[in-house]
Image (cartoon, rainbow, N blue to C red; front, side, top):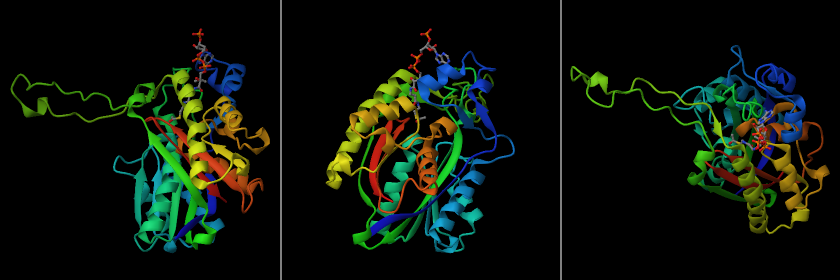
Amino acid sequence: QGCKLVGCGSAVPSVQISNDDLSQIVDTNDEWISVRTGIRNRRILTGKDSLTGLAVEAAKKALQMAEVDPDDVDLVLLCTSTPEDLFGSAPQIQKALGCKNNPLAYDITAACSGFVLGLVSAACHIRGGGFKNVLVIGADALSRYVDWTDRGSCILFGDAAGAVLVQACDIEEDGLFAFDLHSDGEGLRHLNASMKENETDHELGMNGSLLGILPKGSSYSCIQMNGKEVFRFAVRVVPQSIELALEKADLPRSSIDWLLLHQANQRIIDAVATRLEVPSERVISNLANYGNTSAASIPLALDEAVRSGKVQAGHTIATAGFGAGLTWGSAILRW
Ligand code: ACO
């Protein structure tokens, strides 16, 4: 059984924040941010927008391009680390799309690697489980977990959603050639947004009350990041991972029409492209406009590249996600 990408879509919040805007709240400036990261603007979810709403908008566009009816979707995978419900938001998307046959819908949490994991999961469900039309959505609102007083991290992130429809096809038309996935929990200290310690009394209260030791509700801390370590990690593991995926696909580097990396930092993208000897004109980048949108960055950039006519039918794409966990992974695809 083969599987291929047949549609894509994306959505971003309407509120845009420039580097100059950020320089009003932290000690930074446009030149520092653009030279060190390549980022100039980002979109931020505000009170009136919901992440689930963005994800639904992106999914609808992908279905439209694929000419697939919501009733024919049999699986919705929402790749996100910032769901609007702790128990997962994918079923809300399934409901909003009006998929009548109650298709399975669940969340995948793997930060900026989430979308690549979602693609591979879709392929496994199609190849081994008889699924026909799988919506893979990458959506994140990291702005909700950013420490807006930390100039080292608050300049990086933006909010967005992107989606693709992965469809079953004959093996001759297969569009997911190979993948390579990894994680290393040892690196958590370099990038995390951990649960805050429960505010319990840790011992029975003065009056011996059970209520004294029960958790009083939980929340997560803001993103804690060692930028230098994350940078080094990405530049080290991503080229290796893409090489491994190419090897499994039995394809040379020269077969890459487009290098489409998670959009974290232009210097990371350039360094990986240099190591893989991919010329800059074959590298997709849109982070100047959106910053790092976590699980949304790859499908957002793909959608723009497809709709602008850059990526065309039959093109081979090497894609890779990397980030918190630490997690990383790559896939070799044909559009
Ligand atoms: N404006 C001005 N100065 C700044 C800013 C800022 N926004 N941020 C930091 N600085 C200062 C620092 O305080 C430091 O000053 P000092 O030399 O006086 O101490 C100096 O600039 C250099 O800081 P570094 O942190 O060493 O700067 P670096 O070149 O490493 O760039 C950056 C920092 C942009 C964060 C970079 O390390 C990076 O992009 N790393 C990757 C991060 C990333 O991609 N994270 C997301 C992963 S995906 C996910 O899963 C969420």
